[in-house]
Image (cartoon, rainbow, N blue to C red; front, side):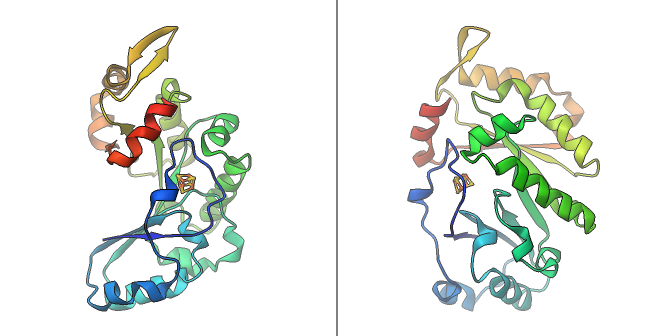
Length: 226
Ligand code: SF4
């Protein structure tokens, strides 16, 4: 089950299409959906879910209705974790966070927020200090600005979170655009094929989840940023 929560998002990612996301602004709008709720996995996404004003109520409700359910939050990492109680983070099984570069400048540029890196790692440090680091799942996305450092991003994540179970790489649909690679323009799908071929087979199979990011509405955005 996927619930999109419409909230204030402090970022402006180059690929984001948040204007078209349909979702809810309060828990009241979820009453009908939640009445017969009995799901084992719930994804909370949308914009910045940790800014959702009824998040504690929603999580308490979900856990009450289906105590064995797993909650996965897709966050930007750009929010003030100090405003939320520690116990809230304990109730979430996975906190998915973006890492688009090993460089704070590039990460911030992709996210359109010059505080993004600082906020992200303040939150990561908080989770580590509270022994909640095993809830973190980092993902990255293949973009023109970062495709050369996918390995480095993967290594960076492992250095920071040696116990991370797996790492997600989101890549755009085939043939969507072309990418400049050492001054040669190469079709995007060839670049992606090569990038993934360079990863050792055992890492690719056991540690990395590849996600093809393809909802049609996002394709136009990708054409512009790749
Ligand atoms: S974090 Fe980025 S992708 Fe997510 S809603 Fe905000 S601007 Fe869009």
